Image (cartoon, rainbow, N blue to C red; front, side, top):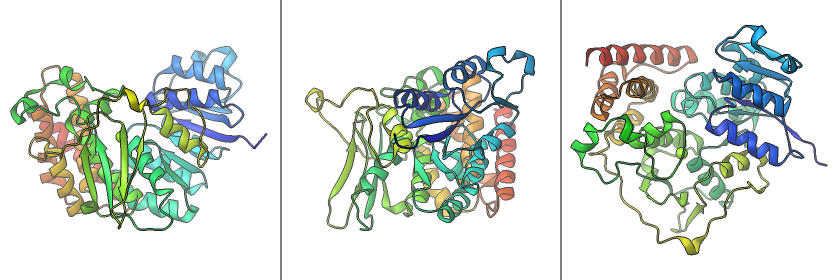
Length: 386
Ligand code: MG
């Protein structure tokens, strides 16, 4: 038996985290789960701890030790935000960072600085602190940061065939979300209920809203720039409603390599876990004969201002991308709380926050945390006034 890889799963009760545990259970000869953390879903965490028997378990929202069931006290329990940092430097080979939000940046940096390979399913880390993360990953060595996001995994898979040839263009596919064919005014008037109906993927609420506003694609452009060392003019978003092509790469001779599959996150999750090996995911195979056709459309920054803002933020540099992310996170949280809030308000809040705080520096982690906090304050105040 080959040595089992020890994996710490940060955010194990979310969509990515729980699917990672499913594929880990399928391949117990390959993976050992050594640490598990959750934000507040304690019952789900208890189930996972019972099943995988990690050495450490943590809950970001603290509970009294008495609430931990007797049979689960065999492992070390950590409560509060520090459970993420402790899990990221625990005795493991890989850290799957599938937490949502800015805490991901600190978790990723801690893991890399402690010599752990990072399986990255958190967007904020690269969006807000891309240069810090890429420096830490470069120090650790090649392939110390593996993407889990389906588009970035697809590009990473295509690049396995590049053999040192430079990338001419990254083709970042995008389902277009539920408002793909809607007029601008209708999109602006849309509410949470309409935004939560994603046509292809079943995901957490935050990312489902982001997929409707295309802020998810905005964050993915920013991530791709860092991960693959390309400038934004070499990243082409391609609206592809069937979500069969998960992204691709174009080379100097015009050859396009793309990765195809069913819309199942288990593939990119497992590929990062087992890289460079390919293992069965237990999911459905892609049936090309069952496909009616694959279609492609140009993205429209007029109807989806998130794409225009991305361009502006990447041109501005500094903390602009961090500010966009923070303002969007606050606006999405407000949208999820308020059935009457519209996407128009969400876009306006992000735009206004960028105007006010878009030129802050982002040289250090402190700069980034400051820009994030300030942007949230401005966005919240703006949301309160609406
Ligand atoms: Mg994605």
